[in-house]
Image (cartoon, rainbow, N blue to C red):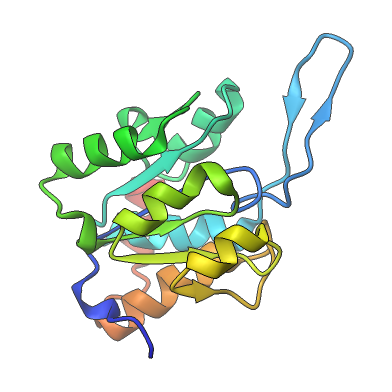
Length: 175
């Protein structure tokens, strides 16, 4: 049975393996580099333009993660770096935005995401997620991590709610 996307008011996600393909490059100084999909980024911007809160809950600690997502309109306080118990950060995100967990889609791909995925209204994982995650996810995207699975379901949710319409002037002001 298809989940009910009509009650969704916010989105939250892990980074490595969801917003990226999970690959991380490191230079000799230990600086880490990730590749993000521009279409996922645009989906986030569309959601922010319509007022949807978005939370980033990741074990990653790199400032480049915060920079990537604040550039998409996510307030810095909604980017949780170094998250080791993700459900605690998810609950904080919900509390600060006056959300019930069932009003949030959470995207995850590996074992540390499972508890949060179970708490969320709808849990989604990319096609290349860990098997344990695929077993509990409400939806397994046809897309792998870092290749548009976040955009796919942000767009689907917003279209079902009548909110997927682009306003160039608002976009110019916000970004």
